[in-house]
Image 1 (cartoon, helix red, strand yellow):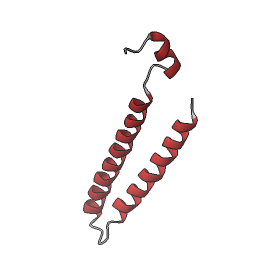
Image 2 (cartoon, helix red, strand yellow):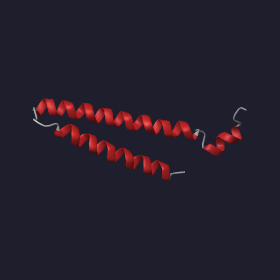
Image 3 (cartoon, helix red, strand yellow):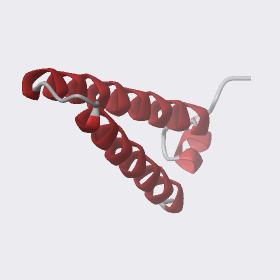
Image 4 (cartoon, helix red, strand yellow):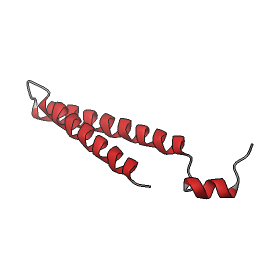
Length: 75
C-alpha cells in the first residue's frame, strides 16, 4: 500500500526510520571526524598518550547524545 499525501503530512513528510537512521549516520560521522582530528593533533604535537583523540571523542559522544535527546524531544 502506497503512502498517501495525508500520511506524509502526519509524519511531517519524513518516515521515522529514515529520521533515526540519519541521526545514527550523523553520530558515526561526527565520531569518525573527532577520531581523525584527534589523531592528527596527537601526531602534530607528538604526544606520548593520545589525549587529543580521547578528548575529542569524548566531546563528540556527549554532543551526539545531547543532540539525539533534543531531536527526540522535538515533534
